[in-house]
Image 1: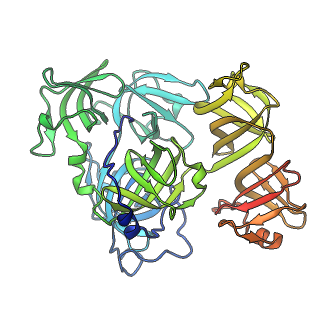
Image 2: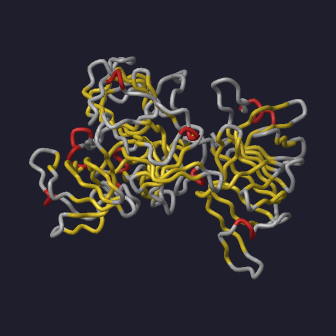
Image 3: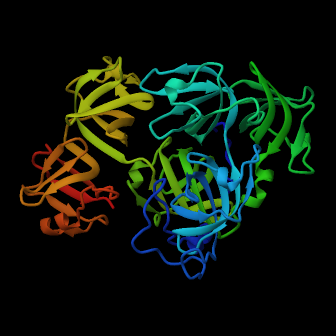
Length: 497
């Protein structure tokens, strides 16, 4: 269990799942263009902002008014809950929020209630640039930043310093690390210290518990929220937000919010449309149940995958889960991958384990502290060390794109029986029967390749190329998988969405 805890993981009966599965549309990047043809209405409304169907959504917002999980919400009449008393007009890019509202076309909606969900407000204890990752520790939490992190009142990671006070928004990964979506430098007048996490080591006699990797919280003088809540509500595993003063590793709490009780007005009710953005944790298999941002999600054989396939589901993969709540669980009609997924099979060259970099299929691959390594050492024993993967050995690389950088989420030593790439097409030449992926990885489909659509049904070569749309402007490109003994003579090509 990560630091956020597991909320609402209840069994979902098969009959309930069958009753509530339905297409919900929506989703997308931080600020996507509206889809050409909106999906069917969920609530019998008339489209646009004539919102009828309730929707509960959580994740990282973009300003304008509020764009969350692909829906643009009118925030002119919303009620905002925030310990810094920010208004809707003061909400900003990268903030993590929970929202209850209405939308009947999955494009536009009306926000009724919004709660700002920053994960911490504290001073920076240390900073690191090891293993191809920029990170810092604050309030006992390891905060990882990337090229998607929004900075406010500070120029960027280089402008951060030990002892500097920051407010951080983001999403917890499967290891309990905070993947920062917004880092704001704040002063003493910008709210008291604040931490969020799951209670552990509860000691009622001492009025203490532990939070976030060893922070001792003293709650002897704290008040509790919501109204009527007392210290008797505390239990190990309970997710709380504590406010007060942090000195070293001791947090003296003046207020403790019990999250599940505090957020009851924002919780999804039975059969309501629900959207969660976050990192997958507790994953074992699809179809199955796991957590997204520590909330229970159930996939079924009917779940649709966008931007990847069910094989891309794994712990620490960032997704948006969309569906309907049943028995406290989001039954997913759609899983959308929020980072462009890439799959490569091929021979390793240019291995540099010291800096965490190598090449597969002539593509540079970067390994960081979050990459899972599965290889064999010289004695043919299992290893998690990148140095045990040698040049001219073969690997399966599951990765995501950060700009033009291929960052591996998993590197696994494999047999050299084929070459394979699954990625979005950046260029095609139908006359020469070639497709180009990533950074100029060109594959040739002129031989005796077989072609299939996204459902595995046969296509002719002409039909296949007609269905492929290269990336251009706001279009991200068709996701395609090709494989063969070599990619200069592809044997199989398949559309993935």
